[in-house]
Amino acid sequence: MAVTSVRPLRVLVAEDNAVNQMFTARQLERQGHTARVVSNGQLATDAIRHEVFDVVLMDLGMPVMDGFEAVRELRQLEQQTGRHLPVIALTASASAHDRDKCLAVGMDDFICKPFQAEDLAAAVARVLQDAAHIFADIETPYRVAPESNGTPACDLISTLKRLGGDLNFLKQLGQLFLDTVPEQLQSLRTAMQNRNRKLIGDLAHSIKGSVRHFFAASAFDSAQRLEVISVTGDIAVIEQTSERLLHEVERLRTELLSMLFSVREASPNSGVL
Image (cartoon, rainbow, N blue to C red; front, side):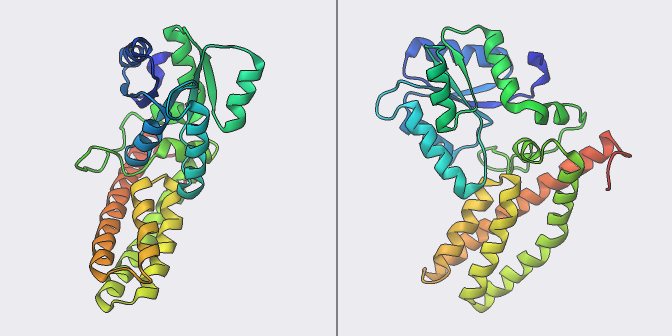
């Protein structure tokens, strides 16, 4: 895959060596990506919890928390969120043992240092695979719902990758969500007015199960928190969390609607919609 065929990405670079940090960040920027650099695995996992990234470049030997432990923690977190964030290991060794160890903890690919720009571009392309190609073919990009920090409400590239690149299925799944979620949101508003804690928790659980398919991290986190606090939490906190969930789901709806419109414009005869 050519470098230019991959959309601009937000890449987290976990690397403790200052020279390597500068080199890697510059290579990413030259390829049109945005780099966020941290110096150890703990800072990497913290960043992943609070920010949205498309790919992670993970050095293996770092202080505080090494790359192996960071990826183990990340994959455990993803069991709750349902999202899979591609991780490329940065290793000084090309041995089969190191490669197997990287794959065993859940890394998706690896490149050896020092690497060429082409090596980095190829590794990024491999972990994105067909999903990047399919969305690159859509000339009208889907719009990201506005938010204070500029992060998208969902990750449709990862969604499409999980669906095996089946764009029609993604369209169907997105349309089903758009058809069913308004009733859930209205029911949540009513439950909040009536302070029906059980119904609030049940609805939060249901919404959580739906939004996770689209890797909607903020909506998922809000729904999960609301589900937990609905039983015994302070009503003011429940109301605040509920409003946050409503906001995040509306952002997700906006992006899904934009995606569906873009797909129709690009290929009006290609799907069921």
